[in-house]
Length: 334
Image (cartoon, rainbow, N blue to C red):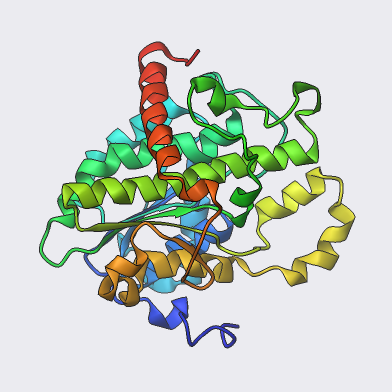
């Protein structure tokens, strides 16, 4: 299955031994998140899975143990519930995690909501922007003390991997991050907010934010002298359950059996994230990869012009901190 890119990185054979390392992967119930977590655990890491319910978590653990018998009773599969539509819930979950672990070597922000109809969360954010960017921002920044503590340990190799998308390049040129209203943008006229174009563009804005965040995190780490790596990536076009649901939502369900064979499998889709999280190549050449945007199968690529604007990344981080603070204090952002 991997013959056509095995010379670059084959996750089945090229992930090094990860015994002693702790990883956290979001969105592990299916698709790329499931494969990412499974491969990390199969190669020795203690992995924390996040799903939206206890039932899904237990089902995920069961399926992983069936896929790799060595995981049964190993203590390498752990879980907690994480609902990324809630900033306050994400903050609380991250704080609970901090009480459970003394180190964190790998964080993979994988969970995402695909393009969908416009919804506003109870906290005053666009649902897709909350799930795909704001809550991952909260999770990561809450875990920063543990990540940075681990990064300063002898022989450490701390990496934060944020799964973005090539769709970030379709974000409107007018995209800005100046006020809280920009976190609930319709991406066009309110009258057509559920058109396919505006659903796509809202998703693109969130994925643009992911890339800007990953770059800004690396910049801040470099200034502070933290020896850790933050990258974002496009996993490729992957035949996940979420993609199938989205295509059916767009009214093209009858075409799915015809187009599915042209997409990558979930394991192939997880390959670039696994490269970013574990590849010895990245450890040997940190300066090449730090803050970069990767495409299959671990190649450094140039993101859109908006994604390269350093001042936009700074503005996004500042606004994110303000919005999160207001939500945590008042329950909602105005």
